[in-house]
Length: 287
Image 1 (spheres, rainbow, N blue to C red):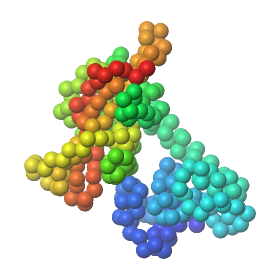
Image 2 (cartoon, rainbow, N blue to C red):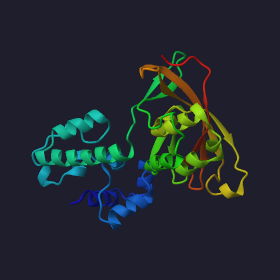
Image 3 (cartoon, rainbow, N blue to C red):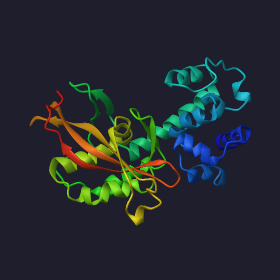
């Protein structure tokens, strides 16, 4: 049985709709429908989220009954990275081959479409969270091509991340890449601030995770009556960009702040709309 067939069989078993699977995983319903219509399997980077949503182990999803005869699982369900590793180690050679194949697909996809991504979340000297971004996509020697940025951001469509302080799940819709790259706020950015917003495109999920200082406002524009039917939320977020000396040696990080704009849509989900007012902080840079 193919992976997409197992997914739909499990949906029927759980009496779960495709819409509910989309809500739990952040994967677009159109993408889920395409698996069945086009008879294709989901991308490798979606498998863990699918397993969690369907209460399946990764091994159960990737291998058939015949292939599982000799496997020994140390856990029944996917909970964290270690359980995934333990499940794979206890599986058969054929299962390991299929897992490696999926990982190779994921690595190839990311090496082409997402060519950098060394991102981490740390606390600064005051204990405040900041996303640290290394391996910069865009250099300050040239103006940013925002069409390229938009292309990178399209990889996030259908994804979601949780604001840790608020326990709120934020989704990324098809409007976000264009708004982030071509909004009025983006067009007026120059110098370090433009360069910073362009490079922040590698860390959208992490920027969502550390967002703080929630503020709500009603929607007053008719053009957003469905997209932001239940209003707008704004959060503060922060990230750090490496700085180098004339010899190309890393000497520290400049911290930037931004205002994350989130719309509360007609379907009652929260969607990231843009990150505005990117500006370098006057606080002491990270060493």
